[in-house]
Length: 300
Image 1 (cartoon, one colour):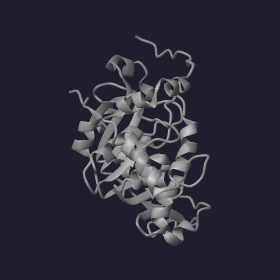
Image 2 (tube, one colour; image 1 turned 180 degrees about the vertical axis):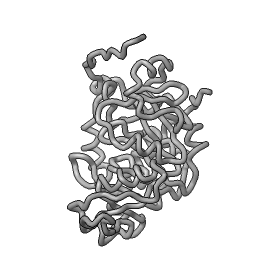
Image 3 (tube, helix red, strand yellow; image 1 turned 180 degrees about the horizontal axis):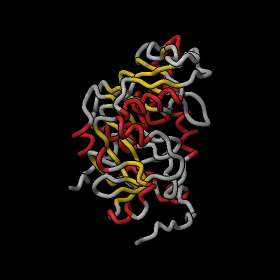
């Protein structure tokens, strides 16, 4: 049965006030479009979890939808701090939990495996143990050095952006792969947004690229350019100019509100957002094809 619905309907159906929402993706394939739709629908009291919050959580916290963030590394990549999230934490307006990158992935892996926790090697982030009671040390039952354990993370809903998916939710990802697979298997509900919706035969032609199978997917949404200002490998480039611009925009409440009013609340969906962005910017983000070599899976 097809799981293909609009992003508006998917957010309305699967994201509720108070949910733990995990927006997956590392460096690229960041689901900005879904984050903006959450804001347009005025979802509130959310716990925003993400290994690297990026600008999307700065924008969502600025809009007032979150009561807590769970993260590892928080920053505007290559620029500096996420001013809004950091300020809200420092002012006591936002609850927070911080982990190492591997700590966050281990939490998701535990959740995906149906385990209450998982062990990991001690890291250089020992100071996190002092401020996060969820990071604990336990003795190695086999006599080695103590290990770190972290609790499972099972988000209420995960949002994963992919390059292509079929209508059933089987999804192909390539380029830099982050925590998408672990997050999708750990979450109670999963929304997939895709640059392209393709025939099932396309997905079956390269099964090793199917990191997200339909069995864990609840909704599939066709949302081209869903990652901007991030990028989607093979589809469009990263808008580095905007990451620099956001650093200035986020310096004041007034400029942030003005940006949200214009670029989130002032458009109906991602298609209108990209139209507003303009042909010159879209053209600048175009990339040249660079195809991988064909794979011969054989046939009997």
